[in-house]
Length: 270
Image (cartoon, helix red, strand yellow):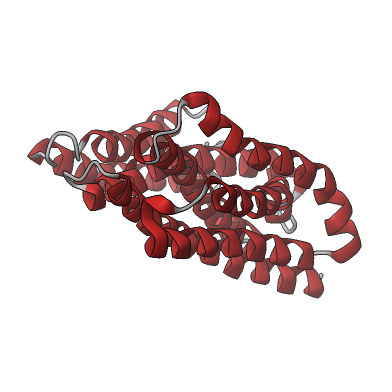
């Protein structure tokens, strides 16, 4: 057991996440900046302890030797980027549909429905596609997500609140299918070069990073959304805010795409 490592890691993540979540509503108070600065110190001390424990022959929560593995490093960046995008997209699209376009919860759910269905279809096909086409299947999946986000952002910039539900559903169909193919394969691909004895620790680090990124994406991109929205409560205001959030999400998907290309090169070298 490594209680110091577990507490230090949890505390460092909390010191970042709490200010990100509450900062905008509290007008970014001084305590928030102090917490984020303290997170750097706590994180550095935790990493020092992990290295010290490793040298002593212990079992750290974070095995620092994992970061020497190219597939793990790429998988960590890809997983964090994906979850930053995924959490924020679901959050901001809900705000657009219900607050901006005036949909009730039922009709907003119907617009979301194709995303969930095609995510399930993509997940079921993911292993078959990666078996048949290798990492090229993941490259195509990121392209689908990027296309859906680009189409959504462009339409919102041009049409604002007049963007139709049918167009939004088309975009979420592309995004849902791409997500379904991509997401189940990220962790498995990240573990390509990880030793079997390290697989459990590696998976734990990846899962923790992804869960943190999911919450951080809602807080950070959601903060941008509300900053763009400002005092505007019209449908056009929400459309503009969602468009800029989609642009940020597109940048995160491009980061995932770069890591997927790295996975492809690693797989070809094995």
